[in-house]
Length: 264
Image (cartoon, rainbow, N blue to C red; front, top):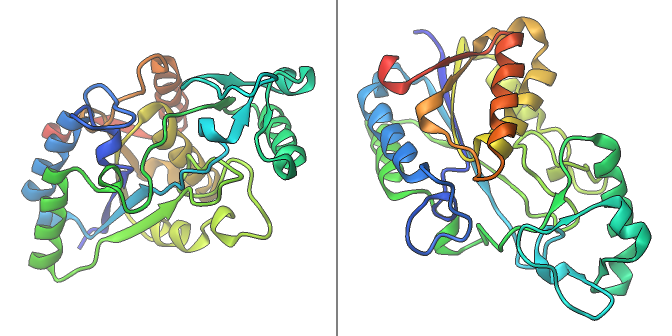
């Protein structure tokens, strides 16, 4: 049997454009409904399914409660905190003991050049409704597991409060003292054994892009051809559409294919 793996990135309620979602991505709920239909239609062809789960605590370096300005005010959602802001004293960690590490983190992000620190609404809090998988997809995943007598591989990320964790492969700034932030070699090795990896999930501009880039970086160029993005099962965060487009341009140039789930 051809080893086709389905990798679903952060298909959680808080990212779906439905009532109660903390960080809705336009089109995400329909993405997940199409993906659920895809899983049901192609269940027999899916050798393995991996689902990543954004898993945060309320106290997190990318949440407003972490930071204050000179007047003690917390930043608004979607505020960008730059290295220049930190040098100028515009923002500081609310807990004094976290100031030095927070400043170093922003500096390391700047040096990496991938993402600036964005303050997100609290989302995908562990144990909350928003952390749960979108209902249609959850049903399809459970049907696949029961019918195939297989286990869905759930991969959590984001619980270390000192670093963002867009990618399911590693944190934006890995912490040597926390193995959960380092390269997930078990995950990479499992994917490397696949003949084909279908990719879907939210959001295209951030967690999908970061995860796929990190997979490709650990795979080597010869294996990038295994990657297939289901473009109608993933959407970018509003205002960050260019990041999603840049990701597709970059990765297709390296060998990733793009198709609609209905054309598979």
